[in-house]
Amino acid sequence: MTRLWHGFAPMGAVDSAEFVLVRGDGARVYDRDGREYLDATAGLWFCSVGHGRQEIADAAAAQMATLAAHHCFGDHANEPAIALADRIAALAPLEDGAVFFGSGGSDAVDTAGKLARRYWSLVGQPKRTVMISREHGYHGMHAYGTSLIGIPANLDGLGTLVGDTVRVRWDDPEDLEEAIDRYWDRTAAFIGEPIIGAGGVLEPPAGYWEEVRRICTERDILMIQDEVICGFGRLGTWFGAQRYGVQPDLITFAKGVTSGYLPLGGVIASAKVREPFWADGAPPFRHGYTYTGHPAVCAAAMANLDIIEREGLVDRVRELEPVLAAALEPLRELPGVGDVRHVGLLGSVEFSAEARATRPTIADEANIAARRHGVISRALRGVALQLSPPFVSTPDELQAMVDGIAAGIREVARSRV
Ligand code: PLP
Image 1 (tube, rainbow, N blue to C red):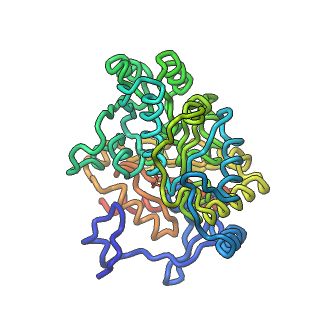
Image 2 (cartoon, rainbow, N blue to C red):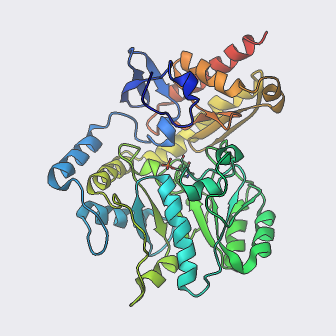
Image 3 (cartoon, rainbow, N blue to C red):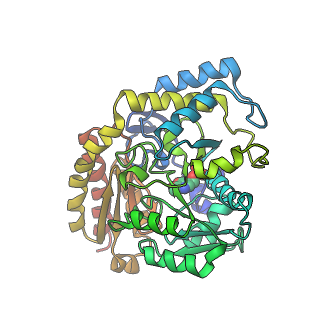
């Protein structure tokens, strides 16, 4: 039996069937039997610069040999953390911001939730504790994110974790407006992903984000964009907010900031949120993690951002967007497929309600079948297959990823007869 407890896994089944990877190079990974796969998901949406980048390993190793770790509590800091905060603040679509680091997306969401509440108490409105999120949204697995999530199964058997969370429809600004009016002077913030990722790769209707920005500004509600997936280039702009032309008050990020080479996440706070904490005599934000601003991790992030900038990978995402779209569109004709979606280098293939009703495990089965065809995908919410390839994938590799997924879907359809 394995002693490794996998995330989101039926361990009874996984115990005898672990899928063990040993090596990666570009858009490809290799299992311990030497089989090669195209990594169509870039790990869990993170490996933007591709696998096997010696430059990132070298940057982390050099920092480890100099000052491997220290903390950023009180007046302590380190050079890589300061440099990275400057760089992220300059890239972000909000002026005069500041960056609070953690170790991943879930603690970024926790930080943003606490920061929103603490901001309102600091400016004299302590009743503002309600956080509004969207159905199908995913905000990680810490208590705050689990409470905000729009994927009900993730809350099964947990009871109430963080209170004062409210869900609205994912694509309807009016529903948000009504919720804010219902909770009115108790509403602290609205949080949403520019494109919903784990919930199925869902792009809201045109104008949605501008409308949300207008509503949040008019009612003086903090707008948080959870950019854990979209941030650092995945939509062909540094942040998803830029694609939709809006300025959030807070941004959460993780994944692409290091391409997953080391765990890092954080929150970018706008001047509006930051300033009360920076004021003379203001109390500290009593929050922080042991690994907030970890120097070796920040050095890896700097090397990753160097690669993205030097190789023009954000522009490359824009160039590859129509290639992925053209490869995916024909999959609409496959048996059992109900919808195909794509934005930037994000894509999903959703099974029809009818196909899922007759075969509830169809997405999981197609995912495993795609792997037999040499492509790593993932079942999202049990309804769709994920594509979020590395930015360095070639057009041929993108086509081969889609072909492998299509072959998996066809195989499952055939096995029904
Ligand atoms: N927020 C979003 C939008 C995510 O997609 C994820 C993870 O996929 C998280 C938060 C949580 O990030 P992590 O798994 O790094 O804690």
